[in-house]
Image (cartoon, rainbow, N blue to C red; front, side, top):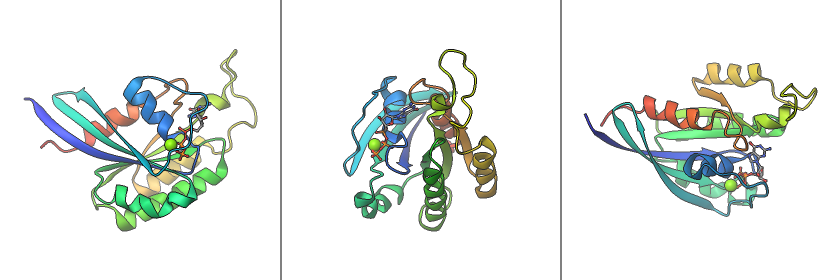
Amino acid sequence: ANNQISVKLVLLGEAAVGKSSLVLRFVSNDFEENKEPTIGAAFLTQRCTIGDKNIKFEIWDTAGQERFANLTPLYYRNAQAALVVYDITKPASFIKARHWVKELHEQAAKNIIIALVGNKYDLTLDSESGEEIEGARKVSRDEGQDLANEENLLFFETSAKTAFSVNDVFTTIGEKIPDA
Ligand code: GTP
Ligand code: MG
């Protein structure tokens, strides 16, 4: 079969957690050390084949800065999938992620697929030894997994910088999208 499927996907999360960097990694397999904040929102597309599905991701990358908060409902309202992103070295960003999950459950489509994404995994590892840097991680894997279990979310820890698990996020969502 040759299923052509479009998937409207939105990224939400506090400023500077790495939303745009995850998209840049997925779409261009690239990373920028000093990426500028998103103004309003950015739209990008990426095609990929998952099994017998030919998926076109239509990606709305929202701005995390508070001054754009009133715009975000426009982008998640008809989304079929959402990435709620936090930074595993920033506890406040995890609290913000909880709020986004709640808002999506109240306001977004009932069948929306939500992935909780703890980004910047690389910052918790020593780049030489690959061992955990003590104290670098501020949100435990269990805290993320527990929230995901409670709220029925997919859960990933990622690094846009090293590409760790970034494709997994999109591929898993693609697999979950019902065939046309
Ligand atoms: P807004 O658009 O303001 O909401 O921010 P954003 O969530 O899109 O964050 P952005 O992708 O612009 O990344 C913010 C900063 O974090 C940039 O300097 C990125 O280089 C850096 N960054 C993003 N992802 C990672 C990561 O996985 N690891 C590390 N070490 N830095 C990252
Ligand atoms: Mg951005």
